Length: 482
Image (cartoon, rainbow, N blue to C red; front, top):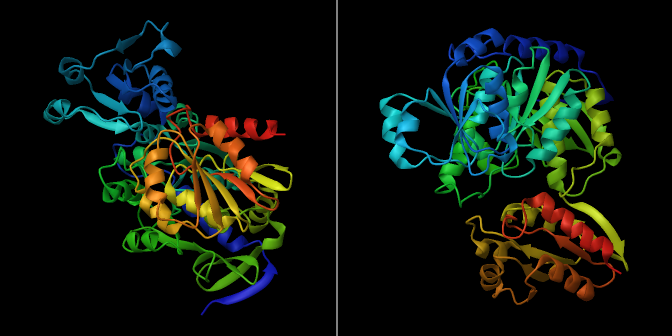
């Protein structure tokens, strides 16, 4: 039985245990994984390495390989950022002849080679990995990794800030900073906190974090993964190489997460907004940590600034990971009390004529849009639209909460969404073509005490480079409203 102690405590005994285990397991034992920079340099020196894609991860791999004295080949559509480098071979058209001469191929996320290259890669045993895996092989620091359908960036930011109170922490990966570019500089006294997408994890082989967290599982990226099973399998690869000396932090409230992780090898801790568990949970308006025997108070909810239960869930996950990483309860509580969610995630923009405007442009799938709608307890004027990710909008139509009174559609997906919403006679639906016209029309229709929410449930690639550009455009429109 768990005994509850309401007093604050520093968990000194646990800190020592976790810190020692963290250091003991900083590096995996697999001989294929580099254990120091010298080994890394010798492993890649004069080897032919092909980088496919020249985005953030491709540039990170390029910069690392240059330091490792490899022969670098780059296959991309735009070489402008490094076009002056005479020591790189720029590949505009990929051929079998080029592929067969490679010792290693590094794929950027979402990159897949044509099937015609599969046979030659198999015959010549050419290793094909992602940039996340490549960075891991160069990294001497313990790795903390976070994945899930929604909430990754918020959670990684929190974990990074918590760990930074105790160690040299670096937030890397899908958060927008290449892991491989930084990996060679990290030492065992540093900590790498990684945001991991399904694309990145699908391309891993020996990747083994010491602490890995799974936030949630819901359909997403079905325009890339062939089905939901493949998508879930990619996410769950985060646990593949972990063992009993490692830690997994799992969402106890998400049945898919719970069921899919029952048989993994690392020690499992949970987080829950609904019930006590081994890990971090909420009881009596207080965030608690339990080792399975005794529970300790971390911080009162009244001291936190967040919108929605999903953000509370992210906070609980981060707290659990940080405590397992050796951060004191006091430091965890201090970070939670001062934390504000990153931009474009239920971000309050302004109040105009007693109507609140929120930017949730990061909601690029149906589940995250529904989460945002449920987080706001006021009548909603919802802005939906963007580019396709292969999801079924009949699901959105069925699950939209009753506080959604009007929907304003924009972008490439508006026709598909409109047909899915036709049976919701309790919701007014307007087709507005652009985000600008949708926002301005919503302003005219919204009444005092209501909310205008951009939570698109779609990707942004029809009219914008990314969700950040879309969110910033929305904020500019809202701030210009009179």
